[in-house]
Image (cartoon, helix red, strand yellow):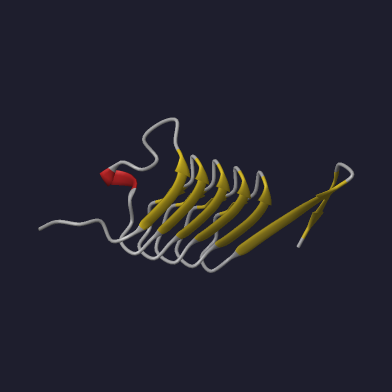
Length: 96
């Protein structure tokens, strides 16, 4: 018997939860949250955790490489073991 080894909650408007975009032991929560990497975590709206142990939280945050963490509004973490966090306060970006 075949079973998915991850968890999804929320909704999708496309293919975000198809088998090809479903990582083993991954978690995807929110609207169009894609958790494609093994043990990845995606939370928010249009977030993508694409590789193993990658994390994307917020709005359109993307974690593209293993061991990455992207948090905030339209953030992308692309370097190996990197993180990118952006907080929007009164339309001013603060990047950590």
